[in-house]
Image (cartoon, rainbow, N blue to C red; front, side, top):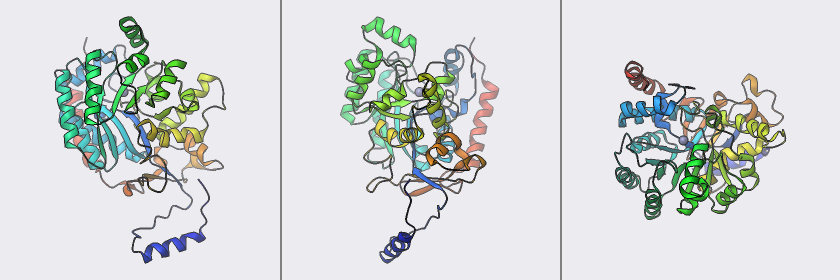
Length: 413
Ligand SMILES: [Zn+2]
């Protein structure tokens, strides 16, 4: 956020006009411009289930599994993804990392939206809405990779769900396949005490070293959560240059714990922010994660000086790019990178006065303060108007599906 010398502007405009490159001048005076925000972990195909069974015991068994069994279709994933994207773009997100079923439909929605996505086909041993077996899941992954090979905005990825959801042989096969297809890997890791107990009992290793023993931790991988990560676990993730997706809103709502995000950041790990799915963290914009990321680390460490606003904003931008191993292309406003940019308005009540723009963004802004968003140099939202997605049409399409869910769903006993 350096001060720009306005006298240079006329010279710049003259030069661009002379070379016929000038397309449009955006007047952002008095506003704040930041790199596009990066959501390193989400499940956007789940947004039409949001708030169902919130805070209920055994929610996974009583709500999520039955909902997925009865209602998850390609059409639902497509419409839910489109709805999520309207919310994400409205909140300044220009890149997402997603894992879910029927991922080709999410890919279609992301491609239509104009933002970019690292999109993982979910893989597990157990039958899933889009695959009865692990082999069917990998077949879907191969098809997704073939369909989006060379696409400028879509990076297909492998999404083994978690250490407890696949056998060691299936996890090794996933690594081989990702290497062969040259695609990233996303997974949930070190998220729950039961996971640690189970994996230690079965293998003698904690979840993070267990994943390392299978060859998963690498520059290819981004691991969501890593709440239960001791000093050795953290060092391992850092040494392997594995990305970490920190999801404080979802982790706190589920009562799982607070990940050592400050230590990851301080020690130079590749850590970015994520919302997790809309059933877990409910909100899908990254702006709402900034505040809680800072405050939860301060509470955990009993220290108001840790996780300063500039560091939080770094996690949401270049940190996210590093977590997805895309820092050569996105995450900062630099020559040679993609023009993913967000213009933040400073007109709302909470955005006045601004002595420290970083503190204003992290502690005072919400997604309504996001005024315009550009992805790859193109407006996807301009002065709060979405340019690639039709909010009303999407809401109407989604309402037809949510009406069926509201009428037809009863939680399992
Ligand atoms: Zn997740």
